[in-house]
Image 1: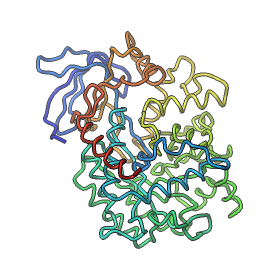
Image 2 (image 1 turned 90 degrees about the vertical axis):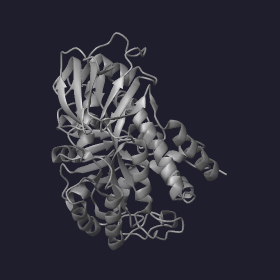
Image 3 (image 1 turned 60 degrees about the horizontal axis):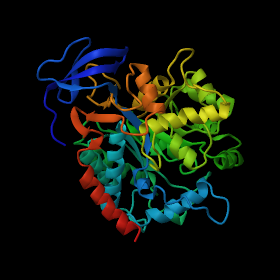
Length: 457
């Protein structure tokens, strides 16, 4: 991406940390916001744009799974579930080489930017060659993820995943998991390679992720946490009812209970899904300061269930959203599906709004903004002095946004726009999306098409 020169931009309105402001002028220097001035007219040489909002963090992605989108929607001979989907994923991933991983990740990251995401948390567990052997550089595929981020311009929080077992109690891994598996020594080497991979990326972060309580033992998780060096720790937990049942059978504790028993869960952690919790687990999780990583589109696609959002928020819980399997990459759709799932379950409307008179679009957007930034170890999110210049402009002429101001813009974006509402996207001060189209779209789509022709041959 080209370097970001110092310049000024003017917006008809902007969502600032203190609320909406009209006629806002930003000064950008070295990819950061150097000045914010509200209630001002544009200077002659200012770029002029419509409404401005911060870019959203996407806190949970498996980029390689973008290649599978739409390919598992045929019913099998028995009851389909997350577990049958997982077997299909194992078979598909065996076909992918390093160039394929990079091409698919670039498409997913490009689509995220076009949708208004400006940072991705890549929960990266595809590490090895198809036969399960390590590449000469254990972090070869981490380097491919970093290359895709560099090409598209998205900010990257890379979360190398430790995966060693097929079930609770340290069960041996299955054949389909061979590309994911590491021991502790190998994983430490992989972490070093991952840090080298992102060294030249703006604002990059490297955390880590024990895959789940199924895939890492208590002793392994204790050994892994120091490798994060203070950066975020993410883990899948309590996504499926069978996982809860298996955990109870193993240790007599539910998954979230078990995790808090064995790990120092705090505000540096993100618990992905956490769908199936008791009331006590929900309260303990919320009060810990950790972030709930919710992936509503994927959770609906896989039949996971619904997160207990009202109870969690009532205890002060924090959340963000992610695209997970990337079956559909759409920031507004993630927020809409989050709220609509709660409406269906509770048979009520505006479930996640912050009290009477509160905008639901504003509530879910700001919740995902702040929780996502925390979970990804990102600089403070928002349009503020010193923050990265990561933001999105909306098309004020879009039918869902016409004649709207303030929170009504977010309500229109989340609940009424079918697409096309995102106009421009900037990352570290560089404009990478114009008129809703990424500047490298044709080339990235072309490489993806060639990859898919090979993978599906």
